[in-house]
Length: 224
Image 1 (cartoon, rainbow, N blue to C red):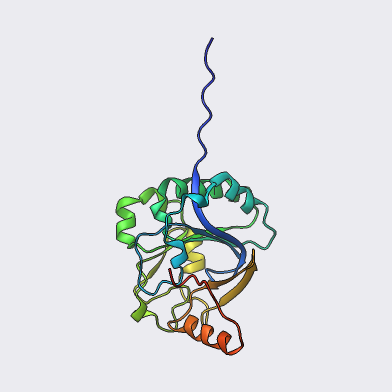
Image 2 (image 1 turned 60 degrees about the vertical axis):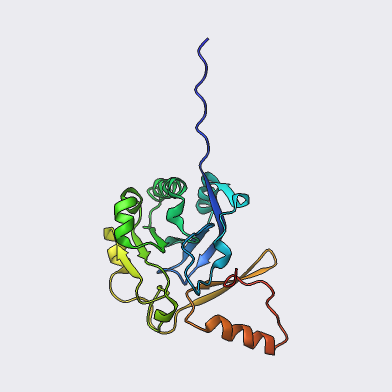
């Protein structure tokens, strides 16, 4: 008797959260996926809750893909941030392959933007196949002293937004959103999420204003 071939093991991703709609991390209305785990540890990072590589956050990539496929319209793109997505290369590849297969069935174009604290040169050397799956990447470590006005979707002026495909060039080359950076507030599972790229000092000012209104934030993502 010939043994049946074993089923391929599911690829799993350490996931901090997924949210729809996101309108502050890329053009249009988007799905946001935040990976869990980052060893870069940029000073002043507003997402320190994503630093620990926590196996308890593992989810099957297929489950994330099913969540994406069930989202309503409008859906113009997907933003993957973190954490550091490129520290989970196998899972990121599986996720982006799943997205690519799904978006080919859609009538309207959907772009993929991935944030990374690594330089573009390093990603081109170590993860060229992953870059081939992205329409645009925003690369470079966050540098708090370079957090200045007018940076669109970037946290600091050293970071680089690079379009990698024709769709990426169409949507990301040229100017980003005008005015102050957009920020969103989302409430889920008893927690409040601030989604976007704040300017330096914004979160401390927010904490001060909330305290003056009698509201205390006990656990915040920008302190580990």
